[in-house]
Every structure is written in C-alpha cells, then in structure tokens.
Length: 477
Ligand SMILES: C[S@@+](CC[C@H](N)C(=O)[O-])C[C@H]1O[C@@H](n2cnc3c(N)ncnc32)[C@H](O)[C@@H]1O
Image (cartoon, rainbow, N blue to C red; front, side, top):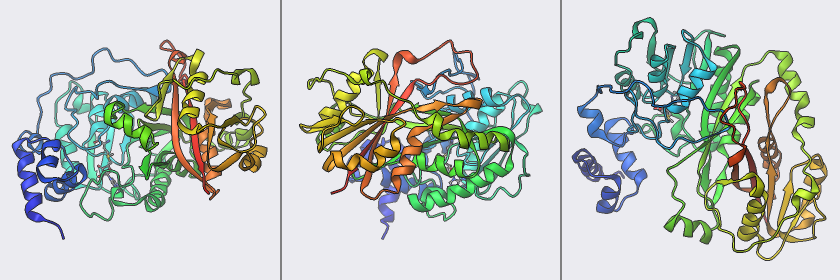
C-alpha cells in the first residue's frame, strides 16, 4: 500500500527546495521513490517543482549557444547540457538541446516539417522554433504537453512564419498524420522503465518492461516509416540498461526494430554521458563487483531509402562487414599495472588503444589465463579475445572449445561505412546473432573512443567514425 503521508511530506520538502539527496537521507528513500511520489502527485516527472509551478514562462536571455559548430565525428560529448532559450534540465531525462540542434541543422532545412512523437518538455520544439522549422510535438502525458507549450511560448524574430504544434497522443498510432508527409523525425523515447514519466498510464511506454517495450516500439518504428517522406531521416536517442551486473542492450534491440521496418542506418553516433561517477565509491565498486558504469547512449540516424538502395544495403552486409585485422597488430606488451577503466566509454589514442584495451580486458577478466582467437588460441582460457573478421562463421561454431566454464568472450569490432554512404554496424549484427545462443549472456558493451581519430575539419556530409566497440559475453556454466 502506498504511504500517502510520506509522499505528501516528500512533495512539500521538494517545494521547500530540499535536494533529492537531503530528502533521500531524511526519509530513507531512493531517487526512484522520490520521482514516483512527484510524478503521482503532480502528474509530471520533474526535478524542481518550484520552477515549474511558480515560474512557467521564462525570460529568454540567450537564443543560441555560444560558439556552436556542427558535430563532425561519431562520438558526441557536450560538457554542459545547454541553457539557451528556455532550455533547462527540470524534466527528468530530457535530452540536451545540442542534440536536436545538430540534427535539425544537418538533416532538415528552414520551413520543413519536423516531428517529435515523444516530445516531453518540448526541447526539440524549442529548437524547431529557433531554427524556423515547422513542428509537431506529441506526448502521451497531457502535463508534459502543457509544459512543452510553456517552454515554446517565447517570441523570436521569425516566430510567426512557422507552426509549432503540440498534442496529446500516442507514438504507436499517428493516424492524424498523413503517409509520406514528414521531413524529419527527431525523437527521444523512454528507455523502457528506467524513468517512469507517468503514474500507471497504460499507454506510457516508460511503464513497460523490456520485452513489452520492444513489442510496442516496433509499432512506433512502423508508424515512423509510414509518415516519413522517402529519402528523409528519422533520428532517435536510446540507451542501454543494467540488471544484476549485466548490460541489457536495449539500444541495439531498439535499433534492430527500426531496421526490421525497412530503415537503413545513415549514422550511428555515440553520445557520451557525463553524469556517471568514475572515481571513489563507484570506481571501487566497479572493480569489486565487476561491472562498468553506463556512460553512453546511441543516437541513430535512420534513412528511409528507396527500395533499390535498401536491397543493395542488405546484400552488401556480409562482405562489407568483415575487416581483417593484421596479425602483427595483435602483438602487444602485457602490463598488469595498467589503470583500470570503470565506465563503458574507454578513451585512448591511436598508438596505444590496442595495448590499453587488451590490458584492461586481461586485468578485469583474465584471471591468470587469456588467449586471442585470431592468433593461435590456447585451449581453455578464462578470457578469449576475438577480433571480428571474415572467419566469424567458423569462430561462432568453435569458440566454446577455447573457453573455460564461466569464461569471458570479448569481441572487438566496428561500424563500417559501406557503399551508398550508409553504416553497417558489426556490433548490432553480432549481438543479434548471439542473442539466440542461450549459452552466452551479454555482459558489457564498451565503446572505445580513439581521441586522435577525431577530425574537427571534416567537411563531408558523412560523420567521421572515431570509435570502435568491445562486446563482452559470459559463457554460462
Ligand atoms: C525521454 S522522454 C522525452 C524527453 C524530451 N526529449 C525532452 O527533452 O523533454 C520520453 C517521453 O515519452 C513519452 N511517452 C511515453 N509513452 C508514450 C507514447 N506511447 N506516446 C507518446 N509519448 C510517450 C513520455 O511521457 C516522455 O515524455
């Protein structure tokens, strides 16, 4: 039974201005409980009720970020979340306005019609208004729609020329929107039930467990494909989850649903998260309990291509996806004194990424024995490292022979830019393949950012790929 007086006390303290930590300590409750109390009582999941209740319309001092330039590489990282116009972090889990700003500027033009079917507090709508795009924002929660309207309620020089429209609705059924009518979709779904946006609303996908969430997101992908014009883009930001020290690859699984509906990948961007703590308590626990702190999300730009391009994409998959690693690159010096990584993004330089990656793997998972599959592997080690190559078919049938019971398999792989300038994502393919294998359990998805592979002067429409992946599995029993 819910404790109504406790919820009321928490809300009162929140309104008085107490922080989540102070409230947590005072009532011995966690953040999820505080969020639930607020969402249930106010009908919206916000971190600062005072702001929203007493000061709905903000006065705008800045209408654009200072020194803004478009992202050129596949790893995006914004040190501050962005506070121009009405943007603020009050709506829990809202995205940084730098994301829709980049997407709108690169994949749409003035006067285009942009859709965000999980619009929340209206971040995308604010950017659409500032950048002279027409906009439809939809959310299942009427209070979020109200907040989004307030957040877009400001004047700009050209404001009257564009339509910014919000409505309560369901992303799984966009029946008010015509087929092939949208120029750009730019949206940010809930990550299953990590953050609940409403209290018990059965149409709110943030109240769905992973399996059901994926079934429902398939309908959203279907509707996205229907309403988007041909040769246009649909972008979503999605992250992974963690359960019992293992990752749940919600990102890859969600991307796969969009692929199934006919989309192809134009870009797969890694959005780094800065709110995760990689020192002190968390660092120690990451080592002690052997897990990595989630530090990245996936920002995917899907393309609705013509049929021929899609067929070409599908038939080119296999060949394009393999990349042979040169054997001599695998030679490296073992160093047990290496500083251990504790989050899911590892940032290294080109000259020593392999050295650092392999030593990190060996230190965390090796437990005295490891081998590299591509380089005369030993029978039965605790850790088997595999560089994804054109031998995958053989590898997938044989690797068990080289792993101890409860051993760890680490696969190093990449996204590849194929013909037609699309992206073929090896890690998504690998995870799809091994998902069916009940002897393997996915443990981590690590992104390796190569610092000096970044090209700030990239003039190409395609982003410069400056990351790789490590997919880590545990062999069951
Ligand atoms: C991650 S939040 C979006 C935040 C938004 N990008 C912002 O900056 O404020 C996800 C949103 O999806 C909404 N939502 C959940 N299920 C929905 C559905 N079936 N149809 C439309 N919106 C839904 C939630 O109410 C929530 O506002």
